[in-house]
Length: 135
Image (cartoon, rainbow, N blue to C red; front, side):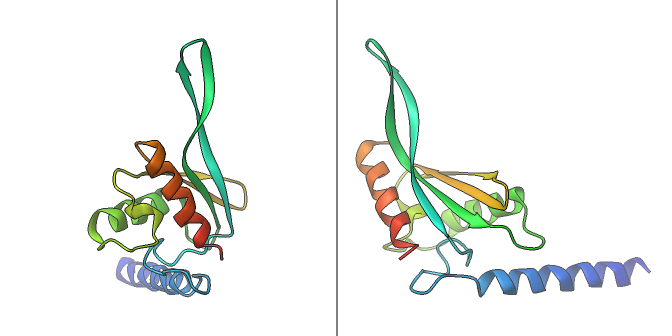
């Protein structure tokens, strides 16, 4: 019985992953975000403390990925971490900006993927590449 259950779970997972791969938007590099469709991109800002007090600084981009059956924040985080560490650099993928880091959080009907860079130029490049994913 456990063999049957294991087979069913495997088939369900494969069906979910094939649906995820088909969800990439037109013109988007499907390998960039493992085929997940990005529906919204906003600048990612963080408070920086210096001088006379805190100020907001651009650190990258936040991308919204709609929820899909079987997709969790942890699974998406693992997929993107694996992709950014093992895939060849894609010219337009925000994950491939040198020094970029990724964090995924649940956000109501989907997930917010925060991609941060180490410096100002990297942050601007992450945002530019992320915005190209929704065009």
